[in-house]
Amino acid sequence: MITTTVSPALSENLLATYLHLHAHPELSMQEHETATFIEAELTEIGLEHFRCGGTGVVGIDRNGDGPVVAFRADTDGLPIQEDTGAEYASQATGTLPDGREVPVMHGCGHDTHVAAALGAARLMREREAEWSGTIVWIFQPGEETAAGARAMVDDGLWDRAPQPEVIFGQHVFPFPAGTVRLTPENAMALADSLRVTIYGRQAHGSQPQDSVDPIVLGAHMLTRLQTIASRELSPLDPAVVTCGTFNAGLKENIIPDRAEFTLNIRTLTGEVRHQVLAAVERIVKGEAVVAGAPEPLIEELYTFPRMYNDPSHTERVRQALIGELGAENVAVTPPKMGSEDFGWLGDSIGVPYVFWMFGGADPKDPAPAGNHSPHFLPVPEPTLSTGVRAILAGLGEYLGV
Ligand code: ZN
Ligand code: ZN
Image 1 (cartoon, rainbow, N blue to C red):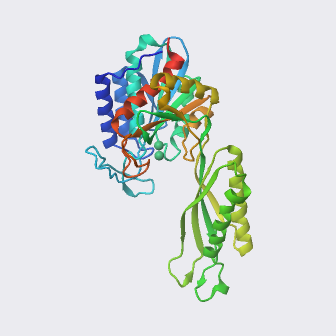
Image 2 (cartoon, helix red, strand yellow):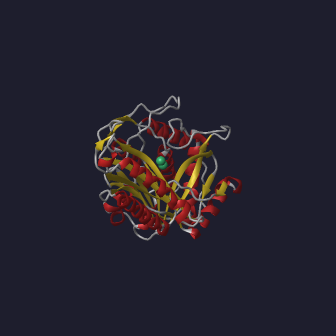
Image 3 (cartoon, rainbow, N blue to C red):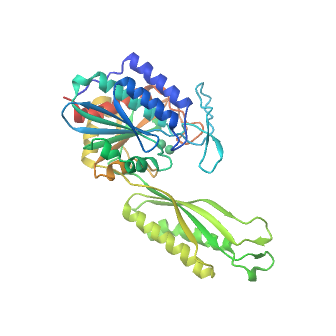
């Protein structure tokens, strides 16, 4: 066991770190200042570190013989105009890859993840006599675009850092601060985003006989795509097929020559993912044949991997969390259809992992805003100290002497 009292000094440091990060969010894969800040903190704590995957940072705490355990915190913000009314609200702006200037906000709470991980790294260093082994601290960029975990692995993360026996991560969500939740096995969804371009034939709106109407064709595709989840899959296999954009045409009396829509697909297992993607391709191409249109173009925009919490490690971590926070503050919850690229850090080398959620909502707030809302604002405490205690509970379970 490692004693995990968060001292007033550490608490002050945690808060200062969090407020700085909250006011200085950066877009995915552009976390340059955040990375520099993390590097300076790691140097001050006394840890060796290196850059990985562009704006990713890895800190290593070598503390004698023993297991190697990794912990990951993601570092990116989102293109959202913050509307929380907080004194420390973000005024930051950034540039999206397509060139648009946008406001930037830590709208998913990754600032709490980084602050808690740095606080835990500091505490583990202070308490070096109480544990033995190696900790790999992974500060991962680009979670929101599913690019960061892959970028770090592709940049040789596991050739440059010792390979761990287990990897942990955590995420803040709007349930009561002071509590944590975890889900064994498939905890979050695999996600795929696709763009479909439909090719028709342009004609005057009064002359439909001269056209192949891509809008009517697209409407048929979208209607039938909704039958994948409702008619093709077992009711016991959750799946979401959402069409988030549909664009076509410039004027009401012109049948356009093309239409374009995007899909967001969520599934919980690789098998169901494969089944849904195959059905999308069959329906999109099949409807085009029925309409006498050329074959549509289907492009992958991004893909999030699985998030499979190893059941035996999850149980071990759950017991450790109960030991630290009390049974009344640790719950097992059903899977979420949100997605994470965290799983790739472990799945890329066949190492098990455990990802838990910690609460960020004021327990007195009856309707806290959710992640990605412009109003999302975790209460600093007890959110941050709970994040630190949860990390130490997990690490202590494996490394404690
Ligand atoms: Zn998010
Ligand atoms: Zn997030």
